[in-house]
Image (cartoon, rainbow, N blue to C red; front, side, top):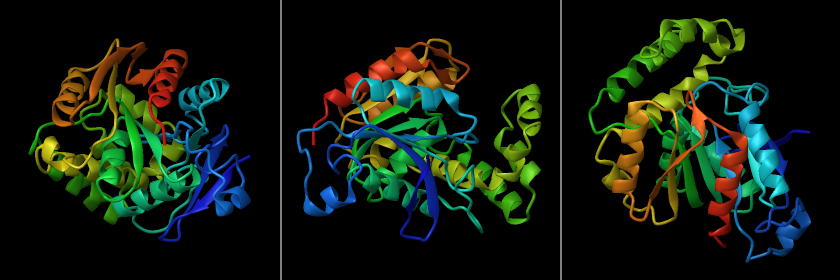
Length: 281
């Protein structure tokens, strides 16, 4: 059954919790209040979805979380603001999205490994550089580009369309570089259009990631970072993984089974479990 976290800005975020959370105690608010933490436990994983998905349709992430639980790793999978069971009124800004992520990290015990998917990677990096405590990053196919590659103008156009209520237009603008048949397939899912307001933080975070050299933006990050791509991927994903590895000291780059921008749950769970096991509170 879904749990709900309330953010510092008053938004309510629905999430699934799996496994025992060592730093915050196994599900117990009383244990948390009493300070009954397992300080030697590995951190939980919080999955940060990219543009579009929510729990109901994202079986890939849910399966990975279930496999992690079987390996003894706790996790949180949530509906981003404006999607699924996390409705949100008004413009969904990047700051609101970060506040949601901060509330979930607190629910996970106070810090966590953020597993970003696509633009969820840039949201995760932005959150860490704006005060959210993070134990590590596992980043899957982050679509990052060098400074001034066009994301600022693209994000501004998406924001303008959303401000005028043009949800379908904003969705089309977001997917402007995708094949037309993929856009039509996405448009055929009504919720993808009605929830298009949730794309603003994705666009804003990608614009931030191009606002300066990534090494400068992430200068304060000193936790383990794993940049992953699938065996079948797009050139921009390979380039972005190289960019991350070069920009963040100690960052690793790895190729795993996966295609069409997605991962395979079994090898992904194994990789995440191994990554998390190397991190201790």
